[in-house]
Image 1 (tube, rainbow, N blue to C red):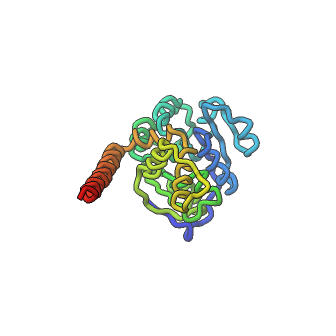
Image 2: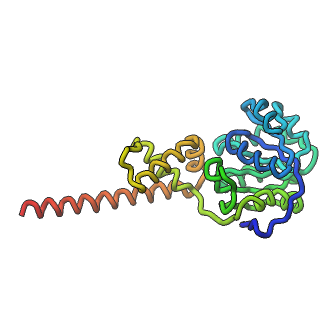
Length: 261
């Protein structure tokens, strides 16, 4: 689904509980706080001091976090820890039906896990903001956002949550498995470095490598492991490389033959 910032209406303030408060969770929280929403957070890492500075209530105990009657529980864990963390949550502590949303960069995996684990009365909204702390540093305007209303009964809460992104960004569909991450990882393995005579094209490659490597390898491997198309995409990359290599070798042989004439 897609949303447009041009038609968004003011959203009602929500009580949003964030599960996982790493870089991306912090990035989202700052905008949500700016819009007037109440933020709570729980995470395996102790972010209590950071949350205090941001105006976020930090819960060390997951039980107390779930009992806090959040309107929305937003899961911001890594892809690889998502299933384990969700299954370990004492969901019986929930006081009332709650909207669960995720922001993972793959969608089939969280959709399946959320449907399997959550109580039937919980609503499910799968989202993917196609931006992050780097690309969204100066705002979310014109940056793509996708979502899937997997199971929604409380239309008001769902609509108010989506308004957060409608107010900040223009949304669109986007294909999955991040090709840029693959290319960035390859450039990193090649250890390309900036020089004093960079061309504009080479400078773009350096920027791509540097931007990609700011993300953890867990994110990149999670995208691969939890996307059913990723193996095929990797095979396509290998096939393309082999084709280019063979073309170059054929041309080299042609030149060598001409040189011997």
